[in-house]
Image (cartoon, rainbow, N blue to C red):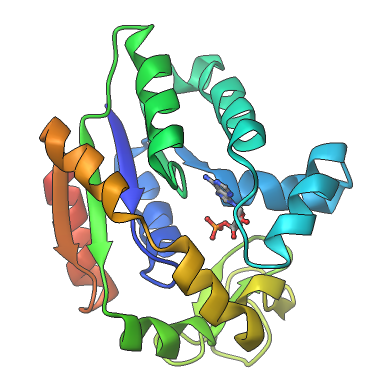
Length: 212
Ligand code: AMP
């Protein structure tokens, strides 16, 4: 089964993807995580990606698609995967469709986590990530027990450059799923919209129901 998770930045895609991966054991593929890993390791791909990420812009399609196709070509993705942060536009969606079709597979579900703009702005400023284990927190919705420290591993929490206020507004405008992308999956008959303005648990439950 191949699932695409769609939603604007701040809709809770990353958190929900982690929960769904844990509950279903679907392989979680996040292009954002892959880029951040490359940035951390100082690879050429990371250096290139960082010039775009730091400005709240998308990394060019050619680079992103090449990285994603390489990832889904590995054996652990043969049985299925959940895509988080990919595709961001119709060009990327078509590349993914073609790659899956070439092995007799397709996107089975596109799950859109819907959240209004006003709510997104309130949410986006408050996101923190553990530098050590990657666990996500939110100042308002899901705070760590001790400020600045990870509940799970005690690691230091940090704020992504692209979660800083100056970059947030630009990201929202540039990184909402374009209407054409949502239409792409609606036309394929696999789109399901989920109200993302509820508790984490309620949203997870709906996502799991849509997958199972
Ligand atoms: P995310 O963690 O999905 O919010 O991604 C963080 C950043 O990585 C984005 O702001 C983009 O700069 C880049 N990125 C992640 N996925 C993609 C993608 N599918 N296409 C282009 N850029 C991406």
